[in-house]
Amino acid sequence: MAAAVVGVSFSTPKVFAQITSSSKAQNSGKFSFINTPWRGCSTSFGHGRMVSLHPVAVVPDKLSDKVEESIKNAQETCSDDPVGGECAAAWDEVEELSAAASHARDRSKENSDPLENYCKDNPETEECRTYDN
Amino acid sequence: MAVCTVYTAQSLNSIPTPPKTHLGFNQKQVIFYTNTKRKSPNSKRSVTEISCSADKTVVIGLAADSGCGKSTFMRRLTSVFGGAAEPPKGGNPDSNTLISDTTTVICLDDYHSLDRTGRKEKGVTALDPRANNFDLMYEQVKAIKDGVAVDKPIYNHVSGLLDPPELIKPPKILVIEGLHPMYDARVRDLLDFSIYLDISNEVKFAWKIQRDMAERGHSLESIKASIEARKPDFDAYIDPQKQYADVVIEVLPTQQIPDDNEGKVLRVRLIMKEGVKYFNPVYLFDEGSTIDWIPCGRKLTCSYPGIKFAYSPDAFYGNEVSVLEMDGQFDRLDELIYVESHLSNISTKFYGEITQQMLKHSDFPGSSNGTGLFQTIVGLKIRDLFEQIVAARAAAPMAASKA
Image 1: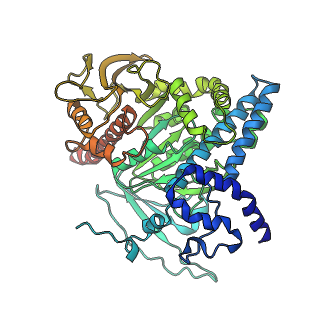
Image 2: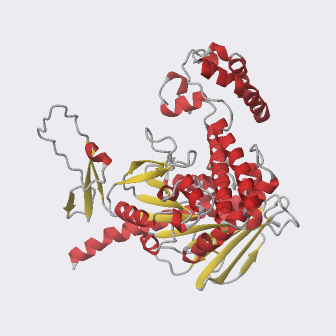
Image 3: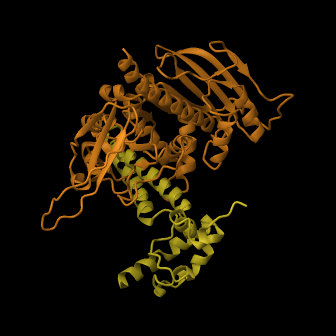
C-alpha cells in the first residue's frame, strides 16, 4: 500500500504536466485527487463511488516509457548496424508501440467521462434517461 | 441450405466440432432441445447456444500499414451495417477484435508466430511473412467461413506477447484487417472482397508526425528513421498486395495547394477493379468515359481550396480499373449532398445516405475529404455485395429444387 502511495506521488508532477497540457475543464475536478494522494481511492470524484486508481494520464505511463525506451534502443542498435535486420526490427517495435500509445490516447479520450461510460451500460437508470420530446 | 451449429460452453477451450444439422429449408430455424440428465458430482449447467445461419460467412479483407484498429474505416463500415462495433465484453481487455451485430473484425496481428522478443532475436519486422502463421490464418478463416467457431490467439500490442486465445463465433460478415490479408494465396481465395489502403509516403510522414510528436521521446528524426527502416520490408511484402485488391484507396498529397505538407487537404483515388462479381464500380456521369469535374461554380460555392473530381478508366497492374478521384475538402453539408447527387452506382438505399453517414461520424478523421467519402462509399458497396451474395445463395437451392 505504501509502495502504491509512493508510486503515485512520484508520478504526480508528470501527470500534472500532462493534464495541464491536455487542458480540458473536466480534469479540474481531478486535481484535488492528485494532490492529496494519501486520501486513497474511496473518495475519488466526490461521488462516494468506488473508482479504481488508474493513472489519469492520457497515455498510460508504462506505455509512454516503453515508447521512449524503444526509441533509445533503436537508435543504439542502428548506430552499430544501420542496414541489418535488428535495426529494422527495432524501429518496427517503435512503430508498434507508438501506434499502441496513440490508440490508448484515443481510448482514454473516449472513456474520460465516467457518467458517459456508466450510461452506455445502463441507459434505463434515472441519471441516464433521455427524452426526445 | 441452412446449417445449424451448436455451441456448448464447456467445450470453449478447444476448437469444437459441433454436430451439423442440415435442414432442407431456406429460412432460419430455431431448434429447442433439452439437455437430459448429465449428472456428475460437480456438474455445472452447460449453456447450449444454437445458432442457425442460412449462409456461409462473407469474408472481407482490408490491408493497411501500421497495426490494427484502423478504427476509422472499421467504424464507418460497421456503422453502415448498423450497430457499433466494440471489443468483446468480458474478454481480454487488450483484444484487437471488434464485434457488432452483423460484423466481426479480426486483426491479423493475432496470427503473429513470433512475439516482439522473438522478432527482435531473429531481426525480423512484423511486416515479414516469417513472423506470421499463415497456415493457422487460413485454417481459422476457412473454419469461420464454414460456420465453425474458432479459438483465435490474441496478440497483445502493449506487452508484445501472445495471449491465451478467445472464441470467435462466425458472424454474418467477417472482416480481416492487417498487414497480410492478401499475401497468402489460400487466404486470398477465401475473400469475397478485398480492399487495400495505400497511403503515399508524404502523407504517411505527415500523419505520423501528427500522431507521434505529442509522444515523449519522439522527434522528427526518429519518426523519419522509423518509416525509412520499415520501408524495405513494406515494399517487398505489403505493397505487392495492391494488385490483388478489388478496391485500392490511394491517399496522396493535394495538388490544389502548392507545397502543402500538412496532409490535411488530400487527393484520394478510389481504384476499382472491373469485372468483380457483385461489385459495380462507382462512376461520374458516364461509365467508362473520362471526366474532370469541378462542382464549385454557380450552383455551389466552395471555400478554399475547393473540390475537384476526376473519373476515368485505367489499367492497374495489368487489371482493368475505373478510377474516381477527389482532391480537396468539404466544408459544408450542401457541398457533400451536391457531390453525392451526381455520383452513380453508389448503392445507397435512399437519397442522401452517404451524407447522412458522413455526418453521423463528423468527428472521425477524414470526414471532410475523400478518405471519409470513399470509405463510406466502399462500406455501402460492401453492404450491397453482401445482400447480393445472400440473395444469390437463397435463390440457388430454390432453383435446384425446381429443376
